[in-house]
Image (tube, rainbow over all chains, first blue to last red; front, top):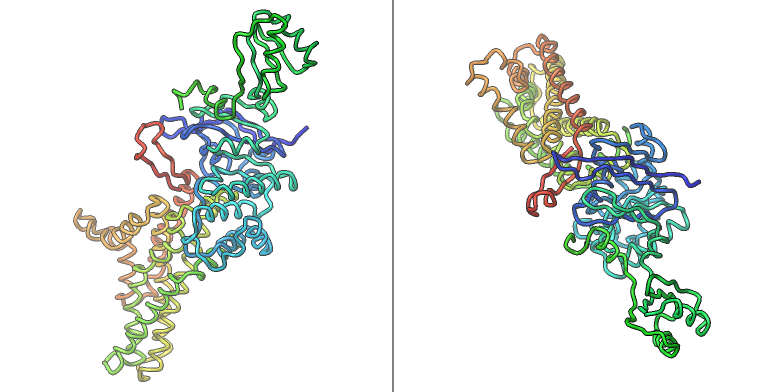
Length: 305
Length: 260
């Protein structure tokens, strides 16, 4: 059984009368890349801040590495690498000096600083001060700080904001490398759903402070998969044609619709065979949705976006 | 705790602000010696008298120290990097207090060191100067340091309470220098002797500081302990975040800042 790294139980965070996070329960297992998906103001950042101890919860229970006491939180958070909101550092210090400040604070080794800078490609910035960094460089330094102490879990809030396409790819590679080589668990939120879909193993969809769906990447893929849909007048005969004449095995019959998962780019093969066998075809279309469409459907359509 | 203090010192000594403070105030101390040279105060005993007068100035500089140690972490929003590593908020505030006190003491020592060093070189030795006179000055300095520590605490307290640097600085100067005026306005003169400023002035102007020391230290320490405790309390309860209310209010421009 996988070790649970983060568990929240009915956690709630209120600002005045407004519940930024409400009755939210998630579970992040060791080795997961858990993607939090939600609109602006959905509660993703608040949840990450609760996990990182940057804001106290109003009610509910939080467990980190199985512990839930303040002392255990302190020890657990020392095993976490975090990047919440915009990376913030001392503007008059260089990348190395900034990391050294935190390295001293955390009792780390100086070798870790160079390794972290090399890891994110900032090892050649020399004495350039943080205030002169581009947004992408700032994001990289934030990531360097997060990985510097060899964390068991990375908590990343919108980490690819401001990165160029190359930077996004490099970032994705870094996350995957850490996850695969070091077995680092990742809890990540991002608006760039296409990127999330390339790395996430589990998704948590948050809407108006509530978790509306928790789903594994495999299940989501299954739900979103592309297929060919053919509406026919005689589905039994159509199924027989597909099976016997075209040796097609990857299909399902749902009412008067055939849902086919192979030869998606050559629908004419199916149409020709069906028509020649006397099956009337009323509609042929390719369906399938991506993560973005899935999310929009989940929260109730584009009027909610 | 030592790691946090060490990191504060690393940060402070890797920037120009603290060196500028040292340079400016040590330079002023040296200039003062130059100006007094040849005047009636331009003797070793005279320099001690002037040094006693100088004891009233450090509280003006202390907010600069607390800004370097804590204020800029509010300004740059980078305290989250420390807190998210599991650092206890109360401990963090306490180490900021220690760092500010130590940096303030280093600055005070450097300024008086330069002043006395330059005085020793530039002024004439006179018969009125004695070890006893110097001992009295050090005694006054020791008691004044208690008030400086209380002032550092007050400055940090306002920073923690409001997490807005400018407001904290104005409040500090207001409370330190204007409370006496307000108390007199409301006919509460009996409280005036217990104010930090009054105590500092009594050190500077009072005839026998040794007699005042126990009286001084009681309100001074009580105030410091209360503010330290309350600062830690705030650190524990409040939180570091910029929370946007745009979602709930529908006004993207409305943003509330919650500080530690």
